[in-house]
Image (cartoon, rainbow, N blue to C red; front, side, top):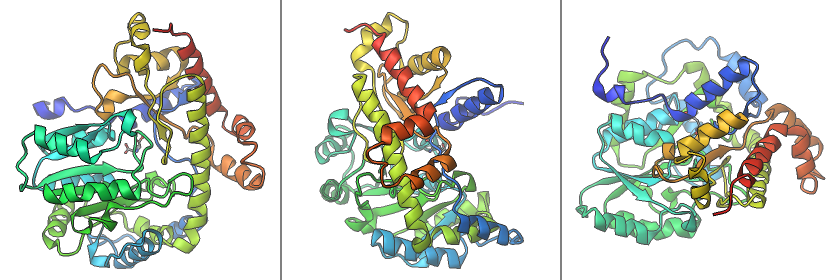
Length: 430
Ligand code: GLU
């Protein structure tokens, strides 16, 4: 059978491929340290579990847009948690926000401005949709954020027509960098977005995993007419395998809604009915916020631990603000790595996997240059149920004893840091 040339070039998504490789190695009895996949490890909240078993008989096709009770519940949640007002007819449900982002890229006119680095699938989704991409190259010096001056300069360099529509994909807190935007940083972008007719797909799937009690602000607060929010329950509610995502469309955009729903109706019909019924529970803020806050504190503790260890090992990395990823680089060790035949982030990730059984993902998968030596590290390789229980038992002392706690209950994370330290200290200074 022959495959179209375009799809021949497409590989399985790097995140999922790495996870499947690690699971396979572990099933074969190999010891692997897994920093290669972003799956939150905590157990399913009891009320969601109960609701799912209660609704096992919901075997009918749901409306493509999603069931109304759930969409109402989501509106309540966004009002209480994010201070944003949406009506149920502005809410669209799908099997994962990934599918909704793809639909938006397919449906909306104009080139896609894509920060580099950004999450692995955006660029491939855009290629599948034959969408022109313009990379916005960010720097660790500005925490990998889009700044007004660099956005303006990029638009000018590309001599883009100011009036014609463009799309921008923003993801904050960001996978892979762990960085996010403050209220002011978002506000500063708004005049440029308006003047240049830029519609923003705002992927806020990590929004509630914000560190240091930071209150997440959505761009929709300051640019409601041009912001399409996507979110879901995969990260802060640890329900990735439920495959559930949500899109919030600004008022007055019936054409966008109709287009997204038409594509959805031709491809996936609707999200699974039992899952939609169960997810109503997952959007009850009174039941969920406590659980989400505790899980976030654990993500913060684990990610800050890994950051601290990287720092001590003199590995350059921007301190995290949210999510469960770090994006360190070995660019200051280039010549030393070259002498080991490690020229790209692929080489580096492969070397760590083969030599130390440490799984990570190469920065090039996130749109970094070939010569750049960044890796994305996930900080979730521990038993979520055990850690959550023990964390609750030790709540009063945990801040003081976090290293001991992590050594006892997240040994793979500690071992991963030991490996990175050993590897880096073995490199010659350049
Ligand atoms: N967001 C997760 C990651 O970046 C994986 C989810 C996916 O790729 O579908 O590791």
